[in-house]
Image 1 (cartoon, rainbow, N blue to C red):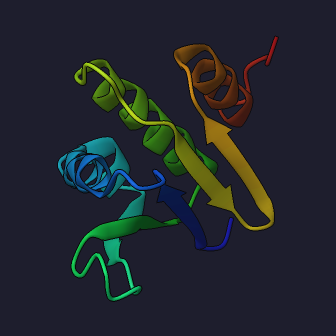
Image 2: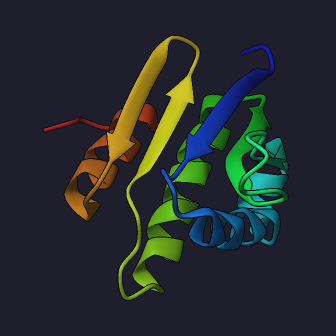
Image 3: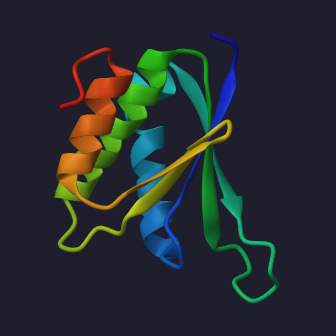
Length: 113
């Protein structure tokens, strides 16, 4: 797999996205497979707020590790926002733990029931 850009956004919840970006940067399984970068909003209204996380991934395992890290981060928050994950031309919004689990299993080569 060539290096691929995985982008993650969380709507208007910039602080939560910044927290998740920091979590990703501290997760060895993610850092080993990709480069993580917070991308600020460019609208002039929310200066310096994180609008998107960009992760350059070099393997399918790296993508699965990002999703696992999101699940772990999500469990630490009383109300975690849904995230929208874009990989190439595919965009998926993950709003609940069950959807996240199915997506992670599918990317890991497991059966998506």
